[in-house]
Image 1 (cartoon, rainbow, N blue to C red):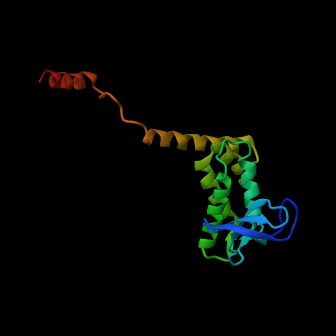
Image 2 (image 1 turned 180 degrees about the vertical axis):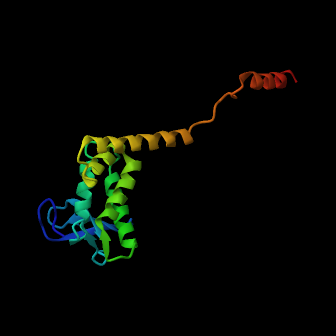
Image 3 (image 1 turned 90 degrees about the vertical axis):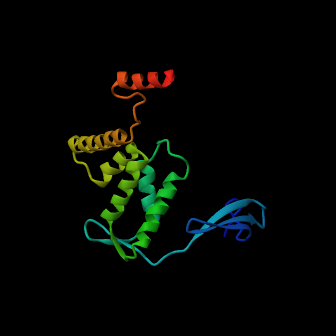
Length: 179
């Protein structure tokens, strides 16, 4: 492992820890003494993506990461959220146990996760992934997102503090206070 600071080709490992599906190693350069971190992951068997035009290309984690980063650009997401999202998608793809995965499966996985993570990032990704050709289809997608959000907020709404019939509730509490 070359030192990222001076380029020296040798370093010593100070600390190793298991993280997610790999190993995190803290290293120190034997030349300049600078410390840096490396991550190692097991490279599973090759996974191929079947594109819309039936071409097959090897799965590229960085391509997925770049696409999601563009969708989440300038969004108030915690550090590491996008990396975790890509890690989860990649792990799920390999857990499917298939050698070839249609690109639509990957796109749907990203869409489902972005929808619950950040609505603006979801719309950005959807506009490229679904290839919106006009403003009407984009508006329909936004409307669908808003109606789903409204339904979710109604189902999770808080119970009322006072009963719907205020006089009945007050009469009961008034009787209790006299006793």
